[in-house]
Image (cartoon, rainbow, N blue to C red; front, top):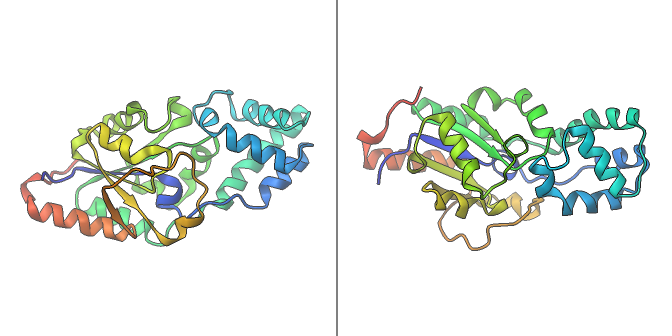
Amino acid sequence: MSAYRAVVFDFFGTLTRAVQRGPQHAEIARSLGADPDAVRGVLDRTFRARARGRYGSAEATLRWVIEQAGGRPRPSQVRAGVPARINALKADTRLRSDAVSVLTAIRRRGLATAVISDCTHELPAFLPSLPVAPLLDATIYSVRLGVCKPDPNIYLAACDELNVLPSECLYVGDGGSNELTGAAAIGMTPVRLAAPDLAHHLVYDADTNFAGRTVRSLTEVVSLIDHTQMVNPEGARMTR
């Protein structure tokens, strides 16, 4: 077993606790003249298309969603709705208590770090303001790349930015978007995070067939890295 040079993380449900839509989403729907339940239905059934940027800019996407739900918002309402939606998603997002310490510990061991997220326009707008942002060497957003997990190109984009091979990467995720089997398919070593709070996580395309290694906390990932580097100490190399 070779030592790793990088650890790649999913974002929602992995570096964060379980995500559920909070009350701000219903308020946004009503402010744009649409029924909140109808908007929720559109959001759920179009997630992957929105996460690939299929409907254009943040404003164009929000307008499309509201119109699909029966609303006819004015341009000024849509413009106001975009920052409101960023704030709503940020409010839904709570970093795990050990996210910062784990990323710090990984970098201290000379490994690079990255996030790959299937996400809509909001995450790139607010992730830079989070405490984990300075601890990430690469951030790969599906909405900017135009593909979602488990497409090989989204994993390879992270490898390119980190200047590592897939075989040198540990991939950690809760299993949404079939991300674990996707990571394994291109040669990464996938690890499922099975934290207790994820029983109530908003997830699409769960990786139900994954039978590989599982950890119960992010902190266990550091122990896993230490064990691997101990088995093969010559494999660890500085990436920065």
